[in-house]
Structures are given as structure tokens and as C-alpha cells.
Amino acid sequence: IDSVGSDEAVIATNDDASSCKRCAVALGYWSDRYINYFIRSTTDRKAPEINRGYFARAVAIKILVDKFIEVTNGNCQIVNIGAGFDTLYWRLGEEGKTVKGFVEFDFPGVTSRKCLYIQRTKQLLQAVSDEDYDVKLNRNNLHGHTYKLTGVDLRNLTDVEAKVKESDLQYSLPTLFLAECVLVYISIQKSSQLLKWIAEKFKSALFINYEMVNLGDRFGEVMLSNLRTRGCDLVGSEACQSTETQRRRFLDYGWVGADSCDMMGVWARLPPEEIARVTQIELLDEQELLSQLFTHYAITTAWTDHRWSEVQL
Ligand code: SAM
Image (cartoon, rainbow, N blue to C red; front, side, top):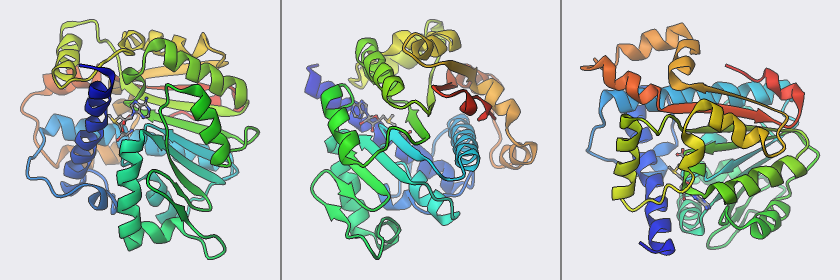
């Protein structure tokens, strides 16, 4: 598979993630009034373990994002890299949580589709519009007053730097970077360059990385080979060997602190009433499978400013 071929396969992982989210939302795991605008109804029901996995991730990340907005009093920016069809911007807006800038980066092949969906959906478009600011739209990019959606290849640092500028991001503002299942598709060399560049430029940054870990064991091998069969190049999997390698990928490249916890640990820290509620939604045939999944994903946080070390579950 050539580079373009594997980029296509990586782009397709977004459709997969979106349909899993849609499925879990439809079953009531969490609420998201916007996901349906990005992904057509799907008949295939996902396994209960998958739904619970998506739930744990969605809730944990939302708690962390909310905390960051709270401690910065909204005087911050959020940059979602490899954002896919994520709906966070609209969900925050609905809750009245505002930030100074909200930027999403992904391959142009993804952002062009997202632009189109936003453009044709009143509920999405309204939220990115501002009466004093005309939304600027072209094929791959959308520039609202606060919300910016930009097509870029994250492996190309020169382009990333140019797009950061175009998106009106301020290097001096507290900035939350979010990456969910993205870095594994980028070579270690390129992702390290990106993380180093962010740490050099953004002196008050927090990074939240949700990704695979423990890929060296048998279950991990199966996960990798499933993705490879679909044509994905998992060139970044070296950093996904353990929670320690996930921490090191930041600490070795200019971040002053980092924490990493697998989803087993994350699950234990989620609000007990939420756990009690979602465990009623579907019965699990096999607890073992859920444990396997939970020990193979982790949330890693890293910061360039010690103040953000307090943003924890
Ligand atoms: N973060 C979203 C989520 O959790 O639903 C999407 C996750 S999807 C598994 C991975 C995303 O990363 C895809 O949308 C893909 O296009 C994007 N991505 C991977 N490599 C990229 C690169 N080099 N440049 C830009 N986007 C990239």
C-alpha cells in the first residue's frame, strides 16, 4: 500500500469512530445531539464492550476538557488534532462553555466533508456564526469567529505552523491540545517533531492523548493486525507500548510533566452514578473482553505549564 492508499485507510478510521459514537449515543450511553448530522444512521450494532469503551473515553475526556476551561476561566484555546467528525465544539456551546479559540485539524479529505455537513445543517452553522463576523468557507476550511476547521497534514510542520497562524491561535494563551487515536498513524519521528514544536511554541499547553497501549502482548498484536488488514500503517505504535512510553514521548520532547493511566484506572475514577447508570444499559457476556480493551487504551496528559498538572480525573 502506497502512502496515499494508507492515508485513505487512516481517513476511513474516522468513519468508524463516528459510527461507534453514534451507536453508543443512540443507546443512551451519553448524549450528543450533533453526531447524527455527521454520520448517517447505521444498522450495525456494536458489541457492548465497544460501547462501554467509547463511553469511558467520551466521559473522561469531557471531564478533563471541562476542568481545563474551568481553571482557565475560559481564557484559553482548544486545538483538536485529527479531530475527525468530533462534536465537542457544539456540545460545549450548548452548555454555555466558551473559549477564545477552538481549532480542528485533519486531512483535507476529512475537513472538506465536515465543512459540507456544517454548511448544510442550520444547527451546526448557527453555532459557528457570529452576528459581527462572516463565516469564511472554502472547500477544506471553515473560519468562524471562534471555531476554525482546517485541512492540514500533521506530518508537515511547515504547513502546521502556517495553519496555526491562519487560525489566529495565540502562542501565549493557555492551550489544550486534544488527540484521540491519531498519533499512532504518524511516524514516531514526525509525531515527536510535532510534540516538540508545540512544547517550544506554546508555553502554557496541556495535551490530552487518548491512544492504545500495551501493544506488545497478544491482544495488542491482534488489535494491530486488524488495523493493518484494513490498510492502516501504524507507524507510531512504538510509543504505544506502555503508559511509560506514552509519558516519555512527551517528557523527551520538552514537556515538563506527564501522566498516563490506562482505561481500567480511568473507569475506576469516573463518577459512580454514571457507572451505575451505564452498566444497566447492556449486559456484558464477557467481563474479560472489557478488561482486555481497557488495559489496551490509555489517557495521557502532558503539560508545559505546571499549573495544568492539576487537570486530572
Ligand atoms: N479524533 C477523532 C475521534 O476520536 O473521533 C477521529 C479519530 S480517527 C481514528 C483518526 C483521525 O486522525 C482521522 O480523522 C484521520 O484523518 C486523522 N489523521 C491521522 N493522521 C493524520 C495526519 N497526518 N494529518 C491530519 N490528520 C490525520
